[in-house]
Image 1: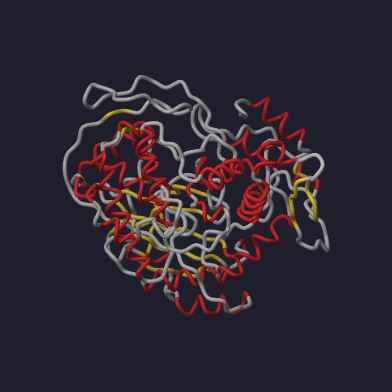
Image 2: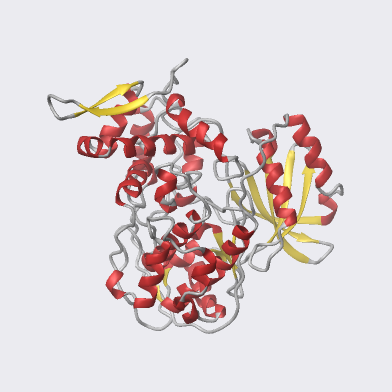
Length: 497
């Protein structure tokens, strides 16, 4: 881990990267902000750390075969030396010999995710497959991410206990979690993602179409900016007062000049304007302001579910409540032919009343700062095996991700979070269903629910509609029981939305 300023200095020097000496880590014990690090180290929005020069005129042909005489795996085709060295260093020679194709598929996907800031957004699958296949030709995956992206252990002050007891022990690398007793209420979820159209529009045509579907009024007259609550590569999120409704809202200001695939954003706005469901965060309006897009969303004051799962211990009935609400959102999206493809605790927002709504942090107004989990677009830890191995996949990838999110609610983090993204992808591809250390502590109903979510065989894995009928969800607690958890997480993290 890069735990102090001297290690950052050595890292930057070794990589021959510009750095002004400013320490970019969070407070001790918090996650290092990768987006800020990348910007400080001189990377623009199109590049990634440790960029290795791209080969030109490369014919895509990658094979790993076993030598008949030695019995060892050898590479053939056009796998660049840099890639082979990185794979061997990250995964080990034994892994390359044992599962060479899975290793290469993991590398392709990681390179694609690192190179494609809009990977989570709407893209026709054929186009996406082509981009992934070409990813190794563009640039290799980035092993030093492991050092930057690790959780930094923290000395933490004595927790305040609501019920004066702590249950269980925190996972390695995490702070102690606090057990909290709670009450009753209701939840809602919000989410979106779609696969877009195959039409090709120029940037000028996209901007013209975007201005047609967006509000033509002056947002400065309607909204009174409050404060900035987050910033990333694509823009800034701030809260504001809507003078027309006297309600506070979340606004994401997206710099369109920095978006390489504006048509994806256009398609997503069209989808959001047409989708209305009680379990989806409300899209309120959109404005084009010069070369910026303002997306107006309802404000969820409770923040992301991530804060709750990292700082408190959730009871099984509370986990059931969150799963039920998220499943209702997923079922609605699937009924409309939409796959979210990025279900995780970061993309589940909580209301101050305990309501639960799914969102897509990459585009919608997820009002939180970019922490470790958010720094890599298309985070791999929640991905289904069929996505990593690049088999044909469908809506059930969201069900797998829901199962991984349920593990988050048990343990405070998804499996393999302490691994590098490349190794995590490899383990997902080769191991399939992850090991759950606290498995024996879960009730039979919860175990069965997880079994159906994390079934490697896609045909056997339950659909959203099937899971909504599962007995585990009948244990769901009233949603207002989440309120004390939300408040305690905000107290610990000094957050207020």
